[in-house]
Amino acid sequence: MKSSNDKSLHGQIRMEKVFKRTLIGIAIFLIVLTVGFFITLVQQSMPSIKALGFSFLYGKIWDPVSDIYGAYPFLLGTLLTSFLALAISIPFSFSIAIFLGEYAPKGWLSEILKNIVELIAAVPSVIYGFWGLFVLVPIVRSFETSIGVLPYGIGIFTSSLILAIMIIPYAASLGREMIRMVPSSLKEGAYSLGATRFEVIKTVILPYTKSGLFAGVLLSLGRALAETMAVTMVIGNSSAIPTSIFAPGNTMASVIANEFTEAASTVYLSSLIELGLLLFVVTVIINLIGKSIIKRFTNE
Amino acid sequence: MNSNISAGVKYRIGKSGFFKGAIIFFSFLCAVPLFAILIYIAKEGITKINWAFFVNVPAPVGEAGGGISNALIGSLIIVAVAAVIAIPIGILGGIYLSENKNSKLASWARFSVDVMQGTPSIVIGIVIYFWVVKPMGDLTNGNYTFTALSGSVALAMMMLPIVVRSTEETLKLLPPTLKEAGLALGLPYHKVILKIVLPCGISGVLSGVILSVARIAGETAPLLFTAFGNSYLTTNIMKPMQSLPLLIYNYATSPYEDWHDLAWGASLILLVWVLLLNIITKIATRRWKVQL
View (tube, rainbow over the protein chains, first blue to last red):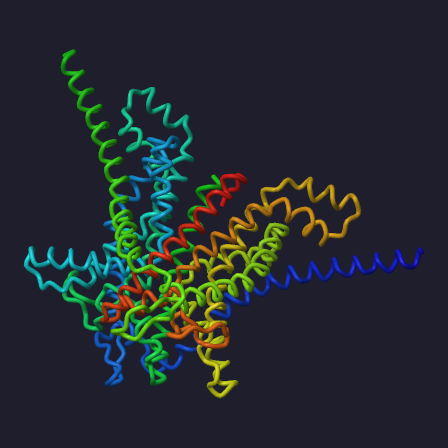
């Protein structure tokens, strides 16, 4: 009797050790996975880094047929679409943040708006792209005709519009959380001095939540930089340097999506991966900065 | 003097009211594109959907009666396999992080999960191509290159950070007395975690899992270089496989009217599926009062 008890006790203790080791193993696995990601990207982009060096970044011509790889058109396309989208979306996302955080933290109207924002985030990007291609592109085309530029329809501007819709929820929901955290004593102090609601928002809430709102903008920017499908479908996939915001172009993500499976030569494939590496590093840094700001803000 | 002050106050109150109006206007303006999309997809999609649409594979261009059964089944299989890969690892990872809040390993693991969460989906596609697709092709002399399995691995990479973080956040909120009571009774550590702590937080963990499935169900970019797509019906995860988002992307950008029709129908189904998953998450989080 006693020995069998001992045996099961030993079994339990062994299980306990196995379980603890498994947990540690998983934690190590998560780290290895992320480090492996980075190493794989660096390793696979080595041929292009060696062959092209820094000229890859400022080379203005991307012509795989003649073996010339300059990523400048895509860097420019990515920056143009992302920042244009950000500029369009900020008035909306900040309005939503202020409305949900300050004007109507509770109630049916804010429930509706909250659901709308969640829906915007839930719609798959390929559906945004499809809708953009068939509905937004004709609208943009007639707009372009009316202002007298070449009516491509597809291009940087259309991509920015689609992106602007897609990234609203990120800055909006984070901004809401931040605005809710403003201590009511601060607001009450301003009210008791006779400030109007607008003045409270302008002089108390916005300055107090400045860094939090900035973090939300960063997360939106990270999302815009990395977005692939919707942009690929409406940007026009042209490797020339975009001449205006209405011209077709390409972003780093869209050129990878389009050309990766077709890339035949080593340097061609590797230069696409180098674009991926660049995108990875930039978005990860932006996200990490955003998250560290949020962490500091919520700990205060 | 008196009327002067009241004019100034009136101006400020007016300005405040105007600002409120502008905020409400901008807030609700973003509903316009959303409903435009939802209504357009519903309108275009509903006319394309019939019985044949669910049971047939896409017909060649010019033939009527094609369906998207290959993408429906493909999507289900790819997402299910991804979930099977990501859920156990994600939950165990979340347990480790909530149990070891301050260890060095935990802070590095947490950092890694943050990095993973910020990784662009297209980059995940590239990396999985080199981790799974290419080695498998080399090992089998090109018999197996693009496979549904590699697509699932890519999607699992996207699920993993969401599951880890939601598990961690849920378990962190549980009172430590729960665990202490179990340990005081002499229960071994793994039983305390698996039989007491995890069941207590299961609502939050499940909500995170459903949310992560909703996120990956609509993903296209990681599948481009992994599952690749297939115009025939297959249930073999070692073959290229179609999925709803892939089909929508390929057919939407094709020049054929018939294929656009298939893509509209597929869009409606994908949208309904993703929205349902989101609604389930919402109901679950509200009912169990969990914070994600």
